[in-house]
Image (cartoon, rainbow, N blue to C red; front, side, top):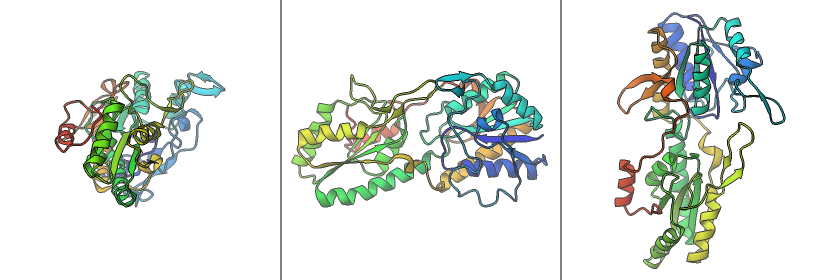
Length: 357
């Protein structure tokens, strides 16, 4: 079997570790021919970009390297491909022809919900596909963990740790806006690990008056500073998410700005000096932590093993204990928010963390 592999959507720590694992498992364990890396995600297929021949030798040293050696884009859906200003065309047949030209028997897609939905559409047109779940947001349906997420949590936790000392020194409220889109996994996990005093997530719209009152109570009881972790998709009850740039055509809206909104509310009510830190893309950068290296490696090996068993049109998953696979149709178009009964939410409540409820 000859494999093709591509990385689609936003980058995340662990992509290179999966590439390394797929190449080694395919060539050394299965004895398959060289794996072809498709540059620039699905764009590489549609536009016929030259593939990169991947071998165990050329993928050495990738397990701890951030980003993706194949590069990626989130603006190259072959079923809605941009062909002009606000104009899109279905170029999926061109992508499929390119797969056939390259002699690729199966395509391994490393991506989030958008890329995996595209993979499912390609599978419906006859392409043998195996997906692996990639996103720092951890919001892909059907798996407990996506590689890249724990690295983002570690980065956010480190930032919260550092902000504690400067907040305490100046008696300030520090509002930290974190990524995650419409899921609060990063803010919740980093907020608890980084001892945030308040955690605001999309799954639990907050009451501004109650949030301000609780922060003011902390100050009146002698707390000289407060740390507020805010997911970029958090919103007040009855309000909307904050958007920096609206979605255009097939592209999603760029979320952001809720941190400044919350800071303005808090400073106006508490009269305490308030500062905002928007952590942004630093959460995607850098090498993966050990847990993500292990998960990415297991995902890569499992993808090859599943294809060797004759499976396709599936995604590799982790249920908290074991690695397995599920049909892509159970993943495409789905979403995995933080459930209201998640144990970490209950732990946060018992610790006295303000959740805006």
